Image (cartoon, rainbow over all chains, first blue to last red; front, side, top):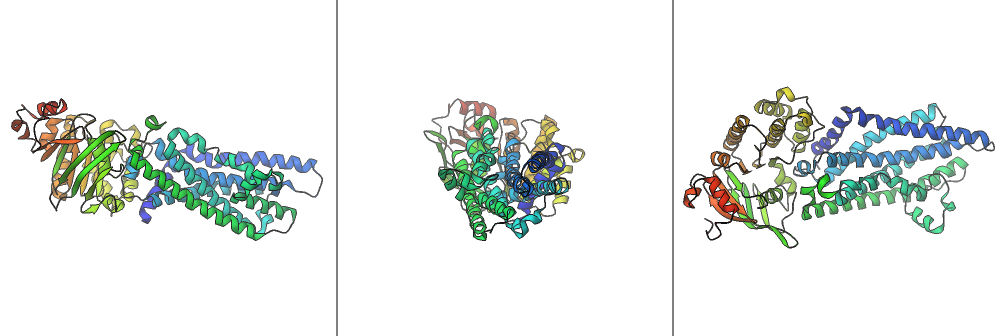
Length: 267
Length: 250
């Protein structure tokens, strides 16, 4: 692992963000809109619901956490797509850069972009709508960790899919979090779901986070072992996504897809 | 095949199902030598270049760069290689300097800032340092690609039609620059071009490819005479028309 090559992948993304307001602004704007929208919904729900239950940590907190996962995933996939859009694969992959270095460089980029989104959401949710992460206690840290790791796994898998299926398949990547959200129980307990959806939920790390979050909000006893399972599952998914990316890359090198990769040739 | 060769290609083959793009190609490029890879469109030149760059896996055969097996030690082999190709422009959304910095770091170039200054000066790109590459003219983009290609003092330099989009005056400067680079650095250069006058001026040796095979090999200044052609361009046309199918490769 060469630290300079890792830094080069991240530096390229820094140059793109710092020189382009159209890339920078969405890092703040979309998450701010989401928090504002759901913040007002929770206020309204608090005003009509029976006293005693606070929708802010249950609903607005869920939106914030899910948006964080989405931003982590998009941090990786957008950084990867920059190379697709600028048809840069030949230049990048004819260098000594290793696949592991490339992926880790994308992850570093995602840490930066998702951190900006997280800070924006936390500021807005706490200052305007009174959401306090202290409500989740020390569990807030593993919650964010699991969602971060899950976002990484999704981002790498999405990048591999685009590499395999071509640039047009980016439209499969953007809705990936939305497809998973019903199974992850972001807004409702997993027990609400039919049995087959519950079975899928059990293998999705975020579902443990949202179950844990709701338990804390209810003041119920919270089982830490669920989060341990979630961390282990997330790490397994990251490893699987990395192997998948490497496999797709090798196939692309073998079939000539990488050398020919462009919007025209593979769309 | 010379044991001192920087690039050694042995029995290289690339097949896509029933289509054979490159068929048993073997050649070597020595230090300081510029070898022209010539042939009509679809002859297998770019496929060969892509395999040497590690972005296309051969169906069979081996490639060693500076004694390093590309298949087994891809990263090490590519660290002493670089390339410029007319179809691989650098990202247009980065400035000239940003592109050189990013690729310089990818190639782990020491004293990178000084090297960037030197190359910007050498390719007359200083005034475009802060300009986005995408708004440069095609000639300026070609010069930037060449500057990128020399960043790491590559022992093997691959140039796929490097002067295709630049005017004759700059093309002449580029040819001189590459020749002096190969001389001073003792680098091997594999150069594809459709400009036969350029090939005659620059290359020490040429390989004529047709249908994925090396049909002819030799000195570009004497080869036409040896095969009854008026000049290299005439010989190229003969190869393209496959009038040499009975002539054994030298």
